[in-house]
Length: 337
View 1 (cartoon, helix red, strand yellow):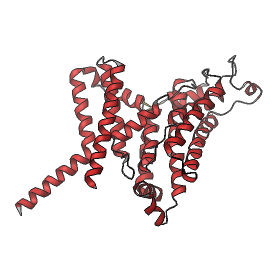
View 2 (cartoon, one colour):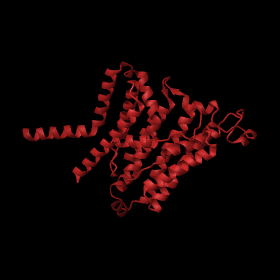
View 3 (cartoon, one colour):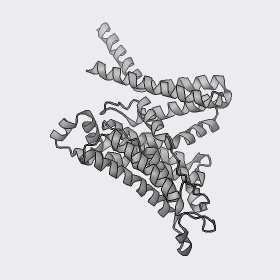
View 4 (tube, helix red, strand yellow):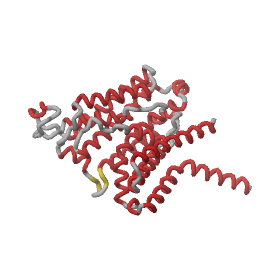
């Protein structure tokens, strides 16, 4: 009996470590950086970490769904950009000499919420195109979203002629520059709300169950009556919606639309999801784990910066972390088989 109890305790310990290892690593990193640099361990710095990582975090919440479906989305950074410039162009101050849309001078001011919604819809439309291509033409997600990445970036550059879109109205910029409780930026609040929504979608809806089934075994999912095509289209729409939301929020916060916004951000989103345990083999992942990955990478970025480590070395360290995370993931999958 004692031996069985001991085995049960050992199993529980392994389960605990497997489930919460990411957060144990996070606590360890916070402790190490706090010892090295006391300025790291302040409330203001933690808010800074959340603020700087919120946009990448939104991308991670989107691409996590794609990875669970055994796909990928490389277009997220470009979707941020195209959403940014379209939204910004509708709320430029009419006194500005170089409007993207000069015809707006002769029209009543467009409400900020309309510009916000237009940015979201433009970005999400790329997800719809990605989903339709992947679901109905069977193009590999890597190729489909790679093409969308180039097209979306090109649309953003063509629309603005590669110029920034500055001088945005205050009613729009307040969306991104405002705070809640006097200290929490709105972009962080949006990120936290999206975590809750993503968790509900993944764990408490039929869509979430179908997504795991499709990622685990697409043939078995189809045989069980799941509409695989509809699930994939919804997945990529969700991914682009998250990217578009990030793009519009960053634009409102920075008071400028930029066609180069989000360049390389898709890799950060994929890295955060992967480090957070979303398996590249599909069918496995959680929002809690994804959040852990976002926070770990955010703490590493902030800690290395605040301790004076070269930004070039930071990229090397981040790349090594991603590779190690994927190796551990593949070994875990191999052991299960």
